[in-house]
Length: 572
Image 1: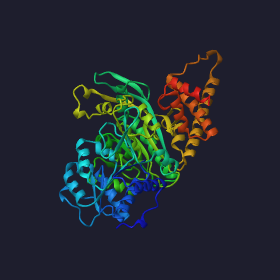
Image 2: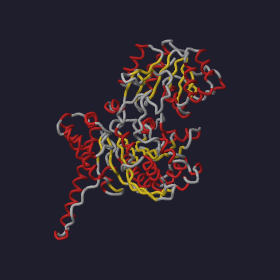
Image 3: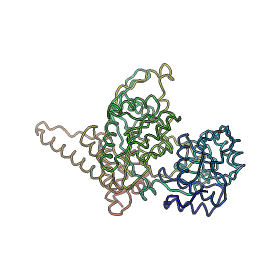
Image 4: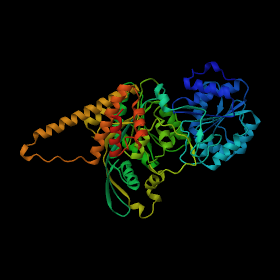
């Protein structure tokens, strides 16, 4: 039997959730906890309690990937629970050397009868890790439901309790609201905002880069657009694709900035800090790895698919002090590499689910004060997701379709490999792209003015210390922004003095982008002042303004919306 005395001390949320679980003793229990909060430790403690008090004789863990099977088995072994990560469907029964097995959802979906027989044979406690994956296909969902319906207890875990579709998640309870819409219900919730307050996870700074992009369309026309400016979804998709092309200047410039940030973090508090580039496809991943080698002189670890070799490379990277890893999707969820502190979001995936899972790789904290920095394209939809990091979402069934935001299908179409394109699509050609630091997003607030790569203004933000409390992050970002604004004012004054009165040029009205940046800075200044008066977090003040005035986060807000929020906060 596992020894409960050797378990690490439980965090407050784990202890409260365990008390709730043991008091209810219900067949199904869903625990929602942000990535890095300790879902694995919590689940294994519950499993140990069930084994020790005789509620169950066996434990089965189901997770999304092969790599996570090994990770679960190692974590369980450390607390005296032996799980077989190499169990095959053809084995039919687990060896008596083990308390149970670790499976993937795909494995269960292929042979639910095998696992139903295992569940019936021994009183089984089932842990369904990242349970939203059970809705990935009807085969998986039906297989999981059939295989584990006879289980004595089922513990459902997830850090992202929602899906982008309406496939019901097995064993999850849904409650119908007054609007007639069904929403998933969790028995225990510990969100990112809670974990950040308790210093269980790291604060995340998002450095959004815009820039000029040029491409040739399928019809042979040359188009140019500034990444982040308002435009149609098709143009956003094509500008985004152009920016992510390794042959342009956008990716090299952003990677150079990300590597500079990684160096700064390594020099100040996290000597083993690592970076991760999340790519859309294998071809791009290899190209990004070559760019990193050219920039740093050090080879990056490349993880291309969920196979045995990839799992070994992830484990090797996690235990090493290598600087960079490049991966295609498989490192987006569940993989535990606590030293990851810098990310480059170089993928076209844009659903809230995928974004939350990807950012979850960087929030795992090892000591107080660690921060994470994620570099991403200045695309309105991504900026909105970055601004809403602390938002709690549930899986929704029967809601009207909301087509705001960017459809992943549209981006996927723009990102297709040329081998699969028709004759017209093959003519799409990314011509050039340059990067420029557009803004820094933290705690729902946007900081900074546009700064070209390689300038002192950009270096001010890349050089933020690596060890900071959440309050210190806000204070320093405000300070950097004020210094940047003051320097810009001095430059304008110097230029004005140099001009002869006789040839003084008329005042040029601000562009929409300049006006928007000016209003954003003014709003942030007012929010900071209100924070100092009331001690309310910046994010809560912005959320209240959005509730009163409507509209998206300030990173996406229009000029009119920003003006309305400024007028509103002045009345507080």
